[in-house]
Image (cartoon, rainbow, N blue to C red; front, side, top):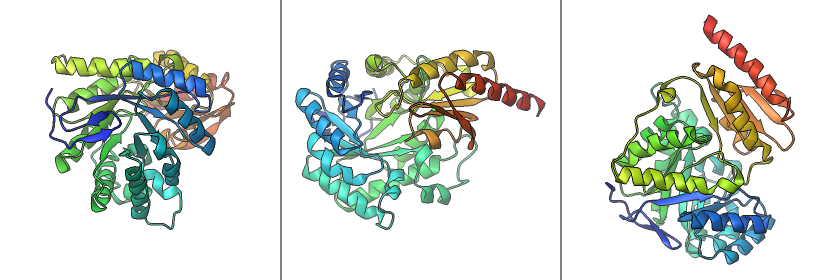
Length: 384
């Protein structure tokens, strides 16, 4: 497989970039405070072949439990996402091999403090605890100032790509300026075309920086695997990409399938086996759903996503996007760009049409209301 000459970044026992084999990653879906279940999940993902396993940490109690999980599965390499509290790095860094921060989330906390100071704090703490960093930019949660600055900069269909790339470049420079080079960058979206465009553009500007590839909220198999494959084939075949994550909506016990899908895609690319782009990605119904992870507040989300897929088969010829999101972290923002969106709370589902809130419905009632809205949207498009 063609590989770009990126610098090597060590994360635990694996090396990302520098000509090393592409590292497959995944994420534990269990609640971290359910220690035994999380231990089983981390071990399962690691044994499936994941070089890095991400675990969710949102509280001090989660940190305590993370330490127990790490002790039980020392052979795995651990990653934690700092979410919206960058100071969490001081608590998690002693237990992990890599931390991820989202530049778009840094403005939430201590808004009067310069972003450069926050990045320096993360880097200094990571360095002190022998941790690598991932600068993880998502098209749906770019820093508002960057989003505003580059509004209108992209051609139709690639909206937001320039803001995403420029945010990644800015943070890479911040880390370089303080002498921290043990980092990788990711730029993700649910649309594989944006993932391809963004990563190619970044790789041209900073070819030495290792890239983590992924299509966020890819959805359920097989469509979610196909969307991801399209992006990976276009990028990895050109030498772009050093570590990958396949994000699928799966029952918790089947999270190993993300690793299996990633390894299968890598094997096919290595052997020169490529698949054509399915027609549905160039038009027709598009269902996106986030990967089943520990932030999911009700496991009924997974069944709901499957039910949405089955219920909407009659609309497969229509150019409509439906987003099904499992938590309040990504749900509100990530559904804004969909024609119809559902984001799931513990006991109800919020239904949206674009950015408009339509109401909150019980899990056993929301499917019927979604169909009403879908039929209305189809009728409107037919009459336009």
